Image (cartoon, rainbow, N blue to C red; front, side):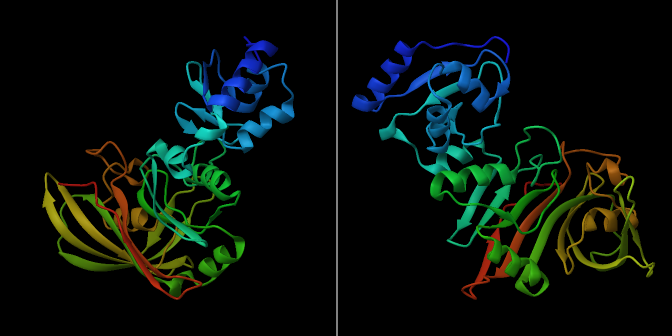
Length: 311
């Protein structure tokens, strides 16, 4: 690592004393980009690597006010690292999810329902040190209960709205294996280009994915693809756009995007599927309502997230 900072033993001893007797914090500003643990090794030398790792695993390191436990969290020059005193370890949800791109709307011992913003991927796309819904919730459960998180289903990076995550592998399997039966309601809010002839309709298509472009095509006739069923209702129209209430019977990759594009009304902001406008500066799709049967209690859970769109 370039431009390493070397703190003396005396500095560390002062820190330990402050934390032991006053529970106070130590702050430092980063001088260069680096993975968090690598930076701490240099910044807190000559302390042992084991001691420094324990600060991370003990949820005693915050970056710009948010607790981080991932060793490879990507620091940027100018970030503020706080070593938190033992008496001042903050609430897990408040710290980890100060990111504001992800909000927990429900949690129990088996699962978490979260509301994510557009632009945050659910899982890494392969970019180094990429922040995702999965990584944020992983940090959260590790800090709170030393647990794990499992992805049950996904929505696109640029789609906002509701998602379900499991907190153990058995809950994940129960939800995924019975997803079609467990989900009672799955509605989206979307804005499509143009005006629809019918105020409401059901679109039935067979979807296939191009392995090279990863773009999904929708055929009105059976071409060997996956049968997909979507219902839409026009809630409002104006400015060359239509605000839609969309309900899925099937949950396929890019289903809404491909099916609307196939009938000549791509979602606003969806250049991949032929959109010519981008009035919201993002893909105009929001996972608004999700209702499902809890895999362990049998209770029907229903969640709603306010649509961000107006036309």
